[in-house]
Length: 144
Image (cartoon, rainbow, N blue to C red; front, top):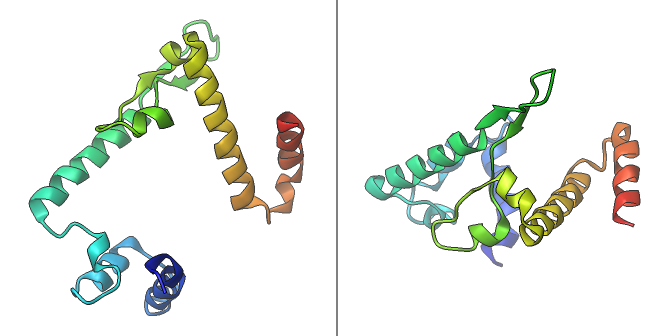
């Protein structure tokens, strides 16, 4: 059995041993022993892990960067940067300004296809919430 196949059972075991709540800190703690199936999924060298954590923090900073729309009387904000899948496939990844993506037909189409893929994932994730049926129906109509 592969780790992917074992993962649900491993996580359930951790959850059940922690008041029926699955917490990232509990997963890390459980994975510390070298013989644990998840041990190799973590970076245990604190120097490398510290750097990777700072990169993650930088991504979070970028993700929350917004600006006020110039012509919006309500002062609405919009995201400043977007991460395209094609950029994430390159070493180091990277972010582009929303404006530059919207001005480039190829990049705009990539972002649109990425949005559709995310909406499909959203639909799968929340399909059991019947109060969102109208949203899901509107999405199906858009895709058709």
